[in-house]
Length: 481
Image (cartoon, rainbow, N blue to C red; front, side, top):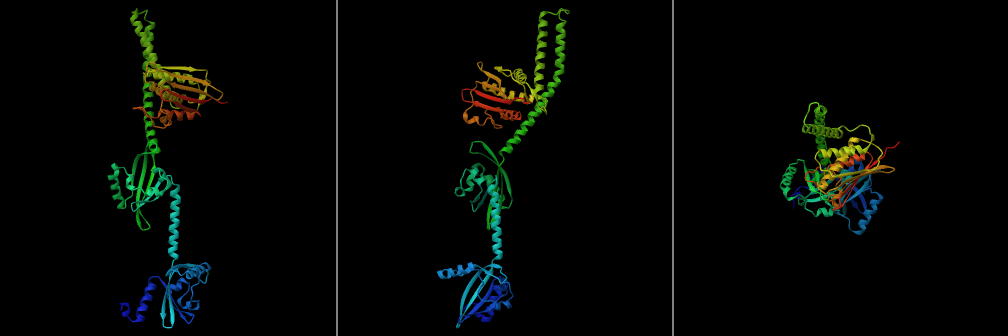
């Protein structure tokens, strides 16, 4: 005998029915007396599911009211003999509302009669929660699938989700491939101790953010901004990671820093050049005055020669300062008609005065003016000539050639050198900012030059091959009426 059987039957039954009511389970009892069904009991929770009160339940048929589709499905299950002891179905209230329910049946012999205990649980709240969860997951998936950031979820030490951006960043085609990879194996050995410390912070519920640098598929370093947060998914702890490629932003920040530094140096150089202009002019004037008075003062020929050298040196210095001020002056707000020949000649003179060995020959056909910015073009010519000079590296037999011609649409300037050339794998990289093969190079010259040429509506193309030198072709559109 069980403990429950030790109570009086009516006491035990009453306790069970009250427990069902408290648990939110509807219960109704239908008795079959010689083929006649009679409802003998219904609790309040079952009545509420049917949209009635317990007293009025006696007036409705004892069988559950089902939709036609559900009636057919249950009939097929009975015919197959595989009906479960507890099943989910949908009942229909008298007002036409459909209520999803979970139904359990228990058949109990009662003498000559047979009682059917029907236990009913309203599933409306559960289904609404499942629907809301499903819609929430669909919204998350919709956002995640189209996000440019890499998003992954790790639960139980296994990747359970990865959006397309994450798969692309790892060079994988499917989540199945990723699930065969240990998440910790993606962390370089040198960084695993730091990763363990981050894991401890995550376990304490702290969100973590950090920067990751690694080589991309093209062999160049990539910079990523990563953030991780611990959460719960379907009752299990999980870690959601968001990773964003910030390489371009880091490069841009470095570029802006370099530009600011170069701008400051340019302003300083322009200021120094401006301050030197006046004393140089005075020095030149005094040297010329002494040369003019040399005969009257009976100066020796050697002194006259030295005065001539001083006058010549002062003139050369004034020319250098003039070229420097020309290059450093603020960019014009409005494009003007520009003759490229004097700009090119001034740039060459400035480089030679600065001690650059420049074995350059210039062959320019008559070139019409273009509409542009003189200072910007001067910077382009300076960058291209400096690259050519560094390529030939001051060889005695080196050659740099600048050719110019005009056609119906544009003027074309070609800068050629007979340096070692550029290997084909690197040729596609030379226009990328901060790419350089020079130990002291910055990697901005060609990139800035291309941007300045684009400001003029022109193009800048580089052709090269190992052992055959490098050719840079610059095309600038002509002035239009």
